[in-house]
Amino acid sequence: MEPKNSVDATGAVALIAFSALLGFNQVVIKFTNEGLQPVFWAGLRSAIAAICVAAWILFIGRRIRFAPGTALAGIIAGLIFGFEFLMLFLALDLTTVTRTSIIFYSMPVWLAIAAHFLIPGERLSAVRITGLVLSLVGVAWAILSRSDSAAEGSLTGDLCALAASIGWAGIPLCARITALKRVEPEMQLFWHTIVSAPFLLILAPLFGPAVRDFQSLHMLALMFQSVIVVAGGFMFWLHLLRRYPASTVASFSFLGPIFGVLFGWLLLGEQFGNDLIFSLVCVAAGIILINRPAQPADQ
Image (tube, rainbow, N blue to C red):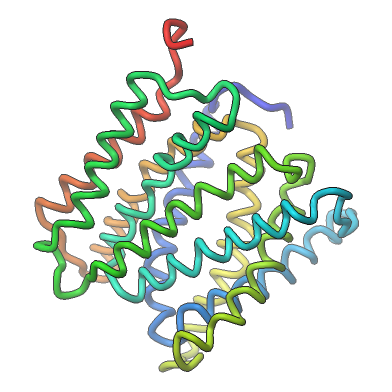
């Protein structure tokens, strides 16, 4: 597909659908944590996804080939991918979907800061800096405010969500500024999964027994995560990153916390008050400003 300078209607619909999938995914992770220890099943998910990605590469008639000079970048990207989900799964074990979603989807903030220094043409303007400050206020407010969902959330869980968000920003950076930019999205995701799977499974015993109260629905959730979210969803997202500007793709992440809060309320009955509503508005508005198309005067 030809790269584009902005998101068209097709891309907008795809990114909205992907944001909804990720918002729903927060609920699925929290539910599955009841049956399996978070780090163990995050590693298991990556292992199953790696098999699915490999099968897809062969199905479309390509070879599983590691391009020369990409090994180091692939390992680094895989470790970042593993770190992201280590933190996210722990966050959803310790705090609410609502709090996690607001903090985790601040990812474009950290991407925008890094892109300003590392990616040509993606510098921060005055408007984007305003959005950056606004989002940071929202994230800080969500973490420091303990009046909403205090009985279900924890400061440790909120900080894990923040670490996961920063880790997530590293994925598109690796796709844009390392040797992985020469690699097809399928092989990028293959690197993510084959490195993160052993990384997470090796660390899993440090976090307790692998099995909690495992039921058949947890198996369905695991397969949904492995096949639909990781093998399908993230491959799709990497394709979008190749077609559209990284910061523009990231701008649709403002929908992530909205969908996360919505699904947390609808499916888990999570409550949220004025503090978290304020944080949600700040983060979403800030992300919109951060990824506002640059005007000629900004250049």
